[in-house]
Image 1: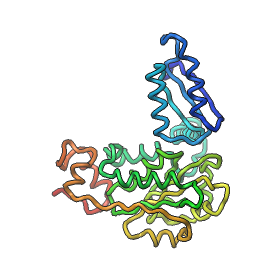
Image 2 (image 1 turned 135 degrees about the horizontal axis):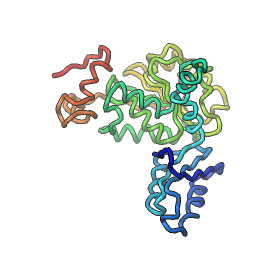
Image 3 (image 1 turned 90 degrees about the vertical axis):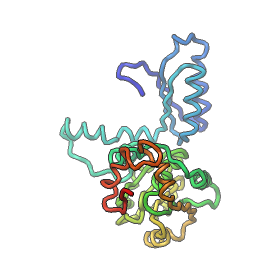
Amino acid sequence: MFGEHDKIVLLVSCEARWTVKLKRDLSEYAPYPADARPPRAIFVTNRSTKQSTQKDYKKWSRDELSIELEVVDLNELALELESDALYRVAEFDLGVRPRAPRVLQPVAVFRERQESLLPGAAAPLVGRDREIRALRDALARAHGSGSARVAVVEGPAGVGKTRLAIDSAHATATTLVAAPGTAVRADSLADVPLDAPSIMVVDDAHRSPDLSGLAALLADPRFDGVTIVLTVAAGSTATVLARWGLDRARIETVTLAGLDRGGSTRSSPGTDSPGRHSGPMWRALPRAARGWPTRRA
């Protein structure tokens, strides 16, 4: 959102109630004329933040102070500073030895990759309000006494499990994502924050060759603030949990049923118009599905 030559105010908070610090600091600009206020500000907090709360304060800053605000929690900032883009500069321009592939990705990196494979994947998720509420409620309860720290989103392929899990998690706390087919071992947990609540989403967990790191995470008190969300194929929850030693954990399950063909066509992102098998998403489906039974009517 910021250009190369923009003037930006940087605000930092280590307070438990970061919203109080943000409002207090920005309100200091209220007495100034609008043209004397900074046009943009970045607020960095070492607390986990909700996307909905960020949105509310961005709107307040814009409406009340005419300041475009960006809120970044410290864990997300640290991950972005280790992003693929910066590593590419080090590897190709500076000749630094290439690093190992990242197992846990920030949501922005995962979404960018998904969008490149399946145009329209970032369009709004529709028809899943009940399931979204159920998962968000489960995640909100995750750190209460006796609450489940593992949530499972189960359903057939193509019904929106990944999008539901990531959108709900990202709106609740700092989120990291393990892509389908990725092995999540104990040595993969170095990027998981220890000082703030966070969520780790393992997409298509039934396809992973190794999820042994998850049981290790649940057994380590340093990671008590971390909640695990698994997306799995229909009917595979019990097998996945038992195979990787998670069957004794407290589990909350959200089940997604398939949509009828007409409903899924009307709600699919990337279509040119409702009810038509066209648009960038439909053209990309055969390539992305890699053999799934997707075909034109």
